[in-house]
Image: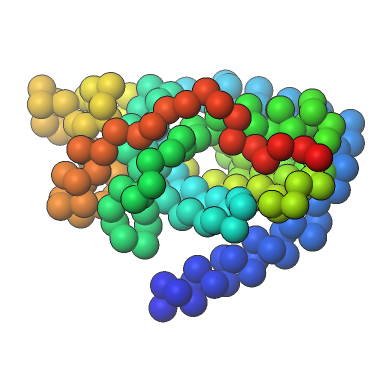
Length: 193
């Protein structure tokens, strides 16, 4: 069943790429408006689902962000941290990538946003890069309580009534707690040609 869902998501992602076009002034204004909406939110800890395809590689993960920092990443297929360490974006990081692509001018860009919080739900980039484009989807974003979490994203020992930062089983949460994501300031976008 999961392979069917993944296959359908991949086909939908390919279909989304067909609508990608050059950046317009309306796109730039929409990006700025939604980025401001996101910046005005009242929370800085949240969980969301993230799908990405780039250079013939796809990821489908559940990301926990605490105090604007990625703390855990779980592969939705395996329930485990991804096998290959890499950088995972916060929503602010997705906005940074969109800002870079829009300013760069060497990409065709498609952007979609969440109505409630303004975060990017689709970031699709194409260029003349023979490796292909970049497609990212964010969904199911849920704010987390701001108190009771350490900087590691684990529920504080001193706050027993806090909610665990992910929707995973206790065993998967314990394995995820041991995972430390690789944080990098390098740009993950494919180079323009």
